[in-house]
Structures are given as C-alpha cells and as structure tokens.
Amino acid sequence: MRKLGLIGGMSWVSTRTYYERINRYVQRHMGKTASAPMLIESLDFSQIYRLQSNEDWQRATDVITESAQRLSDAGAEAIVIGANSMHKVYRDVEARVETPIIHIAECVGDRMEADGIERAGLIGTSNVMTESFYRRRLVSHGVDLLPPDMDNVEMLDRIIYEELMVGKASQDARRALRSMFTNMQKDGAQAVILACTELELVVDVDANILPIYDCTGIHADAAAQWIIGDEQQ
Figure (spheres, rainbow, N blue to C red):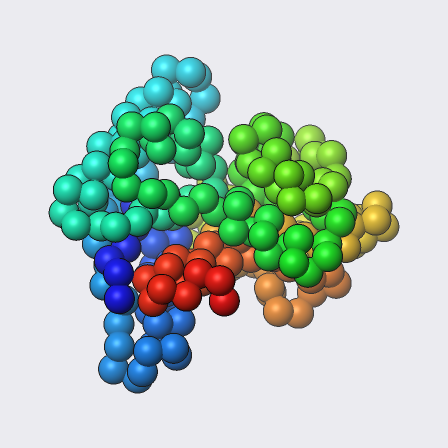
C-alpha cells in the first residue's frame, strides 16, 4: 500500500471522520488486520478560522503549503486536504508542492457524473456555496447547481461555525436542513451535495428526501482507493 498524507484539524471532527473512513475501507478490501499507511498533520484551526480578507487567505495558503511540504518530506506519496472550504487555496498549494493532491470536488464530480446527476443543491460554508473555486469543478462534470440562497448561506455558517464545530447538534438544525432539502427538491434538484464534514452531525446521509452526496465520504473513499492502488474502482 502507498502512504497518504492528511492535512487535518479543520476541524478535528473532520480529521476523525477521514481517519476512520479510510481505515474502514482499507480493512474491508485488504483484510481484517490491515490499516492505512498514513501521515497526519493536524493544524490549529483557530489560526485559519472564518477567513475573510485576501491577506487571511494568503496566510492560509502558506499554512497549508507548509503542511503539505512537511508531509511530503516525511514520505507521503499523495495528500488530501481534510476540509472542503480550504480547497480555495488548492491551486496555489498544488503549484508549490510536487506531491499530488487529491481534489475533493473532482472526486465528487466524478461520482455524480457516473450516476447521471444533472441538477443538485450545494450546501456548506459560505465560500463553498457562493464562490467559483468549488462550483466550477462540479459544473465541469455536467452538474447544474441551484443558485445559492443567501438566507441559507447565513444560516448554514451559523450552524457550522457556532454549533457543529464545537460538537453541538441541535434538533433545530436538523429541522432547518430538512426544510432546506424540501425546497431544493421543489426547485428541481435531483440530489444534495454535502460539502461540509460537520453537517453529517445533523444530516442523515443515508435516509433523506433527496440522495445525499457526502463529499467527505467520497473524498476519503477515493483516498483509500489510492492507498490500495485501486483508483478506478
């Protein structure tokens, strides 16, 4: 098996999800005693939390690049960034680090294209929902995305940053997400793209009004497939 580098800590909840899902996949395919060869660098999320200005994002680019380089120097043969929103700096990091980085939205777009999904709603943090760095990669796979509802954007940022990232999963948040999905279905969505790991705390990805494309799960599975040399599966 090949050695993967994981940039985590954004939040630590996400890192736990990646680690567990990757190892469970490897165990299923490589045997009960198998575990994934991984290097993990868990960042202090408080240093790159709710970035706003260009200066903030340049600092985040430097932090992620330095982390990726340390993992590469330690022997990682490929890297995953364990956060949807931090893929905003993907291009700059990729240009500065020789080790390949597996892009989360490309993995999701491949899966949706294979499934024939043509119209979907995208939910996550505000930059994921409203900026082009994430949306354009999904659109390139033939997925027409519903326009972001700014009321939903504000509500989701509050739920993610003020509740879920500190481990609080309320019934109010669950009801709000169900109502949001119902409206997306009325607007013609065939599926919902769950582009924030922490939202799994209030969204049942296996039983909902619409199929849920769990970006973290898809990304982690793609990483596990890379580890065992089965990327085409």
